[in-house]
Amino acid sequence: MSNLNWDDDDAARRGPEDRPAGQGGGEELDLADFHGMARLVERMHRRYLDVVRVSLSKQGIEDIGPVQALMVMLIGEDELSVRDLMERGYYLGSNASYSLKILVDAGYINRAANQRDRRTARLQLTDKGRELWEGLRRMEQTQAEALVRNEAEARDLKASYRTLRRLDRLWGDMIRYSCLDFD
Image (cartoon, rainbow, N blue to C red):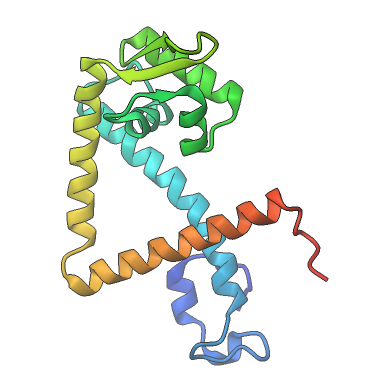
């Protein structure tokens, strides 16, 4: 059996004999699970963008893409600086600027100079942006209700979220503090 099986169906078919030495069942760390999770996060992001794309299409929205729609979701009811938006969404400067220009030109957000510091811009949804935000929130609510049908699934979702947050902090700290020396 190949070691390049990334999806859960293949992993479920693997038996104990397919695991690397020293990695039995139970509570032991299985590096294949860690590796698979890292790949799954990336694949899920692409799939989520596809889900948002379909939702935009159903709402008749053709002037923005899913990345810009996610920016609308991040702004929500808040008024943010461009820097805050970039930090919340982990955007690169040029990508954020391009997407913000599209959103401003399409009428989804207002971008105005901060009254206290004219060098920084404040972002806020327009009525059109709030309408999109509400539609996307309904989409997320429907998905959440389909995913979490009972208390056990709610606990599983919370545990998954905590694990992904820990992984995000670990990777962020490793980069930020140059902890990439694995010896």
